[in-house]
Length: 87
Image (tube, rainbow, N blue to C red; front, side, top):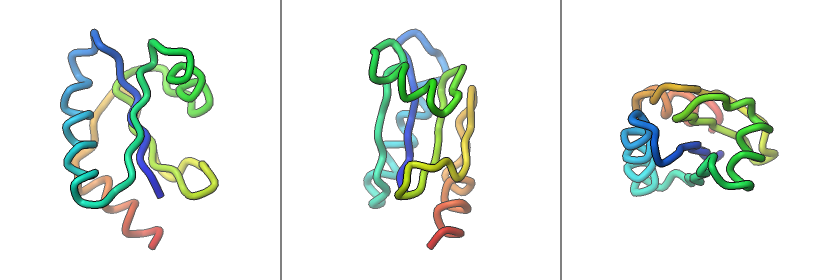
């Protein structure tokens, strides 16, 4: 399982999402960051239908979406609810 965080520079709501990602990384969660202003980030965001930032997607080992938040940042507890269910 891993977390994908979609963000952009001019997004006022993205810093909390990135901060959450850094906290989860320290706890051993694999986190990948995608700037939607880059080709790679936009391509990945399109694949997961992320139309607003921040976007946070939990995917399984096959890159299938388990849970997602678009335009909002979930709490750490909400993230762990899904991470713990899949173990």
